[in-house]
Image (tube, rainbow, N blue to C red; front, side, top):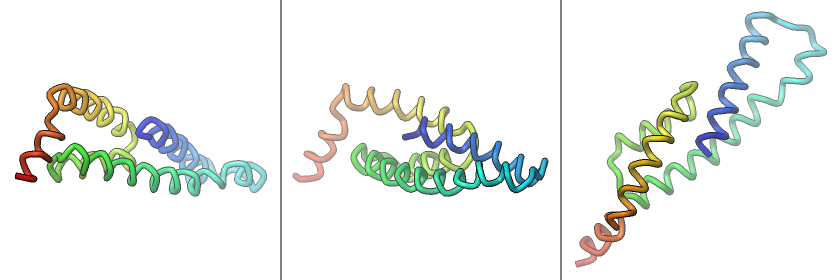
Length: 106
């Protein structure tokens, strides 16, 4: 979802640059007016997946904030996704999320 959200955010930046910078005619605007709505709904799905991953992995609140901002700041989603993927795989290799859950149940 980070890749999809990041790409849609870049498309949204292009759309906003056209809309407010170039100010094309109504014919062009009809072709690109769907982009903000699509990005908005994709971002909602992204937020759900981010919150699910964050709670499953038992990460700190700062990691959640960074992941949430990844869908709002252009290009940040690609950087955050790479780090989260690396850290998540390392954590799963050591069994840490399951171990924390088992330790908390004691």
